[in-house]
Image (tube, rainbow, N blue to C red):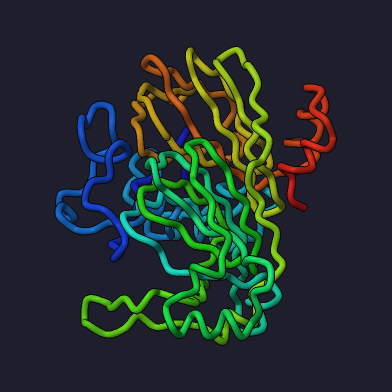
Length: 358
């Protein structure tokens, strides 16, 4: 088994969706020197999601070229995920979402609820980072005061659940935290980066009467969803924008939870970074192009790509061509990765509490 010595690029897995798009610009398609290539076999299809850490995502470089993420996790285990990891899957499911219509009103279980009803599965807490928002783009997050299980059940059967949820205008650069149990939906006109527990348990409460390609109504999971929905869930949005200058440009601490943390790195010049000794990290290129290099060599990076930084890899460098922006995603030590750095930067404890979710 060869050592994982350098940054590793993953090819996204694209998922057709009824509410998706045929044009995935500016992340995919366009100039292939600057933007990740969209597979020719999917041209003309309505794509809703690009899964960056899907089990079937294939590596494009290094000793694992051509292998899937699921295969490599199974073979390398702690050498890829971190020395203390016992996970059988990559810990974070990260994806880009492209919307042209409303997604279903849905809710996810927590870990305990998932174990009770889906043997061997985990729950799903997630977050959204709005990469791009149309002028009228909206999302739904949490229930309005007065909503009950019965009114939600009745509205779901009638295709009218959206009127029971709190509606918010989406803003580019905005971050939203969605604990398990929070009822939610994304609207049209959005490109969203989503990070979540690596689980695909989704209870669909309302799909507005839409039909699948076979003409049949898409199934709902009303009773399952109503059992896990938190009627009083807080809408975790309008988080403080904690952004600070760095030698390479700027770092923004988006949010941290025990399941995942997300930062934005804005590169205006070369960034000299160190891999973690205890975890793998994901770098998702939101904009820009350039090259990534370490002692084993260098490769070009482009908008839309995903790179894994194995633990213990050592130092590496990101050279942007002009300006570039990355989303950095990992399973954090909340004290070491968020609280202490923010306290050193004199951030108020009240604001720190708004971006850390224990």
